[in-house]
Amino acid sequence: MTFVDTMNFPRSPLMPGRAFDRIDGFFNRLERSVGSQYLDEETDPATAARSPLEERLRFVQDAISDVSMHLPSGFAHGLNRQFANLMDEDAWESSDELISSNALSAFLVALVLTKARKRPGIGTNGIGSVTAAWTEGPNRLTIEFLPSGKASLVLTRAFETDEPERAAFAPMRPDRLCAVLAPFEPEVWFDG
Amino acid sequence: MRYKKAPILEAVLAFSWSSEKSLDELKEVLSLPAFERFDEPKPRIQVGASIDVDQGQFSHQQKQLGFEVALRNGSEIVFLEQRQFVFVQRAPYDRWAYFSEQATSLVDPVIKLLEVDAFERIGLRFVNRIDIPSRDSNGINTDDYVTFNFNGPREDRGIIEEFQMRVVKPTEKAGIHYALVLATTAPPMPDYVSILLDIDVFTKKVVPSSGIELTDTLDEMRIQKNHIFEECLTNKARELFGGVEK
Image (cartoon, rainbow over all chains, first blue to last red; front, side):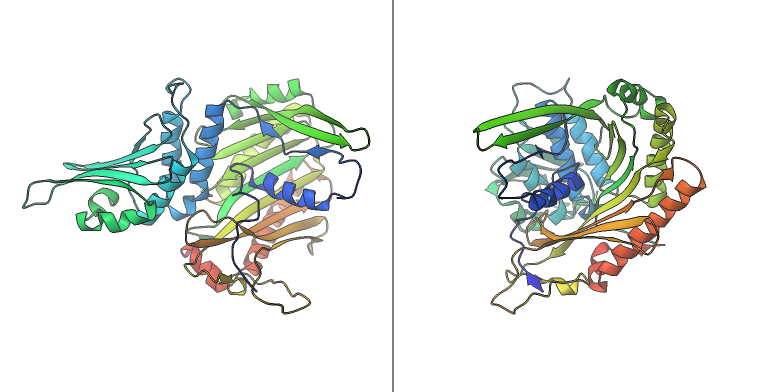
């Protein structure tokens, strides 16, 4: 048996935090009588009443959890704490856009593909982006993951013999990051 | 034995009882010291809708089933409802000892305060997602990764584009059954395809809420769950899990 994943099931990625509810809901709908005059008990899985910021934090944490098996040990828990602090109700500016799912997705893809073993500092710029920063002495790398799903970056890289190099790159697909960073020997940031 | 990169997306232990508890009682439970490390409880709401086609009427209802509490880092979630307690461990999953200790340390004070003597149903559920690297647009051969497959009536043309299957049946142990879901699902990253393997082992017998029978039942359910999981996998799938730790 061979298949191509068409992303049809479940109809979207497993809903964070209640994957089992999602799966049950799918099969319950299959069991319902389509020809019935009454669509009885069309109930959704129970959900918790949360503020939009809390809801988005749960979304972010669950997205991190979903890729945690592809990250180093302890990485996901640390990231989830960082986002919990960043998105604290008391600290969050109410005028800021919530973190975009595209930006978050690009951030997570980049973490997995770069095989980063050191967690970045994280932030947001108020338009829904995720900013990740790695600093090792004079070597600095800041990547901004945008709501478009692309990533732009600026860096300072100090090699032993030369003046520190500075570079900036316009938005690119996150899967291009490894190739773009390779000449700068990015292990200095990612290996910690 | 455990896999270094276990594909467990979510591990769930659920305990259900027969008599409905009040929301006030549930709220009192969540104020116990065992729940101090969790964030403030949130009401757990279910919205229902019905359509009367003849009358052209639509109605909806909203009911609070109980409460939800979660750790600040989102890794552990508890649903406390009028007839059930559910402990959810999100990925990354550590090990059984930690998971079961966390669940039982929370359910013990719940059953004491709510005076639950027996569980009508216990569910042990592990939702696994097997992520398979695939740069090939022709898809993957699932027979390389899982041991059960679709034997359709005809060969047809091309390949299976979508697949879902759910089977519910008893295990060899009296009173212990399982539901097994195998399906395609959205991969978390580009250039991967993913298979969902959801194993829900549950009781169809009344089990005391404490004591050796409860412990033995949980142990047996875990054995069954692990056995089903291993029997579903090929070695090629196991190679994706980063080796094992003894």
